[in-house]
Image 1: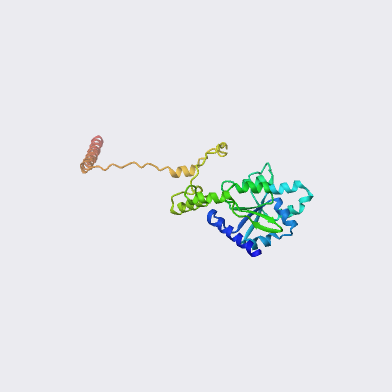
Image 2: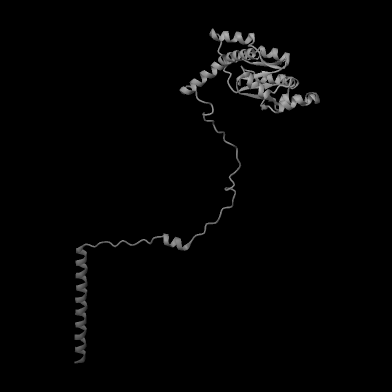
Length: 269
């Protein structure tokens, strides 16, 4: 019986892996009803789930599920302890918590891009999940974990993709990845974002009082250069004329001196 269950699980996993890109480690979202059923059946989820799926698994839950288990009180205290040991995935209900089933449905919207498995004992939630393609569903029956077969909605979606009428989310992701490798699509993170100018106050340096300029006499005196008078070069003719005038002046003085001596001699006689 155990071998048959594992064969069915292997077959269903291959279907989801080939058509929807489900990959290891498998991320399994648990709700409170699944944790309570595991507690009653004494099922060690961390040991039996990887053994059943023959792959590495990650047990996950949300804040809304934990909040719901806290409000239900002591009856689900054991289930709350199991859920608290799981990894908490971020849900869009930060401020206003919703019911666990509504929160888990929001986590698998838009084609289940994170490839979550959904583990629940809630029949209403299971019916809603089966109406969406590409979501592996798990439950516990007779103290054993079972991976449900693909829903009719999922099978119809795969047939439509094979006939070319639709394109699966997995194929869209692979096409986008190929375009990015070829450089046809730019990564939005690499695009330059326009920087918005922030409205800032006045520059604090401009508010400071202006300092008086101190003139250094020594530096200013050294910086100032004295203008030298340019000595004009005189021509040779001007030099000769000046010499002649000087000689004529000397001769005149000499004649005047001789004339004075003659006058003195005449006065003596």
